[in-house]
Image (cartoon, rainbow, N blue to C red; front, side):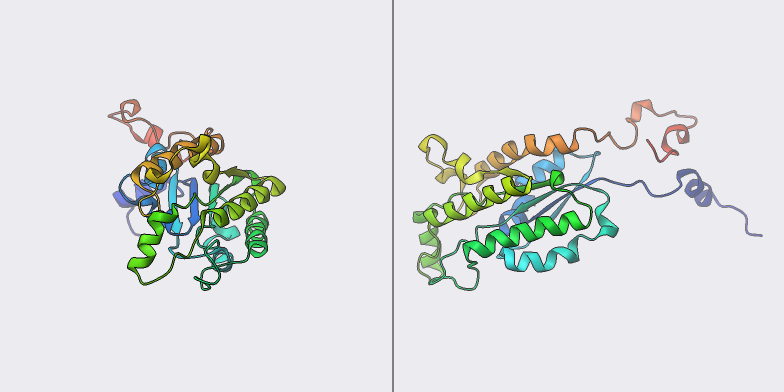
Length: 252
């Protein structure tokens, strides 16, 4: 009979792997880039360290038509049980002008149905509406974005008034489906303030914009993670002689 090694003893003491709660960020490039230095996703991960994992599932250039297709490949019943929150952040690409950017453009009514479909899918794998946060696209600074378009050989392919329609539709979906919504489009322009400093190129977020998003998203997210404990004890609470008294129990 093989003798029990020290590693075997440790595994027996610890038992099954510690389940780690998760917040999943699902969106386009504004989500994908959110883990850059100073990004809003990185800020959330820092605030939630030792309480849950913040997972970045941002896909640059994606619209809701493509997002709806890949969502079941990201979240299934088998891996949904540890999710405490999911953000859905699309619209910046869907709202592209059809004539100038037909590849990314999604008609407004389809955008609405795609958001509803994603919420319904999450519900079907036991992620209820109470765990979902919709985020509207931010406002578009047309003058800055037009420079980016011209530099790449395109005409201006987005307009802020059109983005407004998609933001309002996103807000309405959240109200109809019972999810939280962060109305970024409205908040960034509140009291007719100049929002250009929130954007790095007219479309994507600047450091100031990332900070703005993080600060307004946190109150919505905090409600969903408030009950999460600090995972594993504070080091000063551990025993030098028998640390397994606290570390060996998977409930701590």
